[in-house]
Length: 169
Image (tube, rainbow, N blue to C red; front, side, top):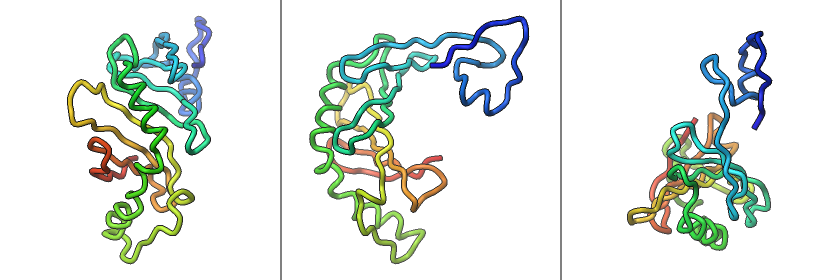
């Protein structure tokens, strides 16, 4: 989190300023609530305290990804930590069916569309986990891909089966 020195002078609010100073909102300075979690590390609470976000190392793809959790003001729950570890452990099994599902969805816009190498063409960028207070478990993967340059591809899971694909911006 970038903190901004409060002065009598108002800084010029440009897109570049906002992209590097997320703590500046509607002409007022404020601080973000940051929590430390044993699994997720440093997590920043959303302003309305309905969730938190951060970066976490995701072992199967050997890189930092975004993590979004629906939570209360106390932060992540043990159920969310356990589900994340399961997602990490079984990532390759959970993504096994995705090429076929994604080909079906992309085929509507690009007839004849084929995925040659899922792991090279779809890069995991985020995992989203809800509060897990009800069943079935619904959670999401976000992927960046050259096949969709306007945003990212979200795959929603119902329990451990891919349910739907969305194109997000």
